[in-house]
Length: 126
Image (cartoon, rainbow, N blue to C red; front, side, top):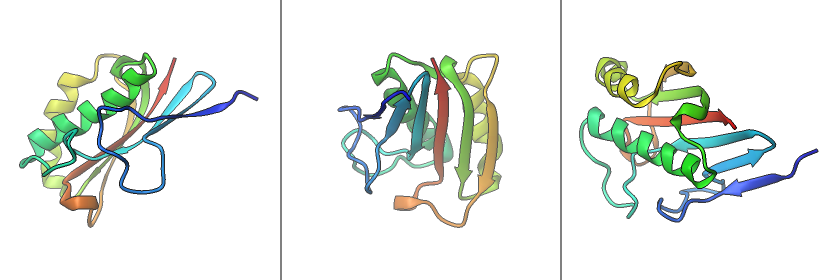
């Protein structure tokens, strides 16, 4: 069985709980839910557009640490605190993820950490 390895990019804020930002095993990289936290961990940007860009950027930082990109992503799960944000989020998502786009789930949740409006997790394959 291949060894499991934590992926902890130095240019992201420290995790806010006991978890790894990413884990690789074999040819897969599992990226934990990424909030729209800037690298300094300070205030989350306002607006779903800025939050979506930041969360995808954080997801990308974890992938890049392993030599991967958004093109390697095969599955995405998105959590929105308000489904009314879906059209604006979807526009940015469509620009950032290249074709063929990954399989995807979008779920509305009652709350996200630190008042975030979005959280994104992903599975990538090398």
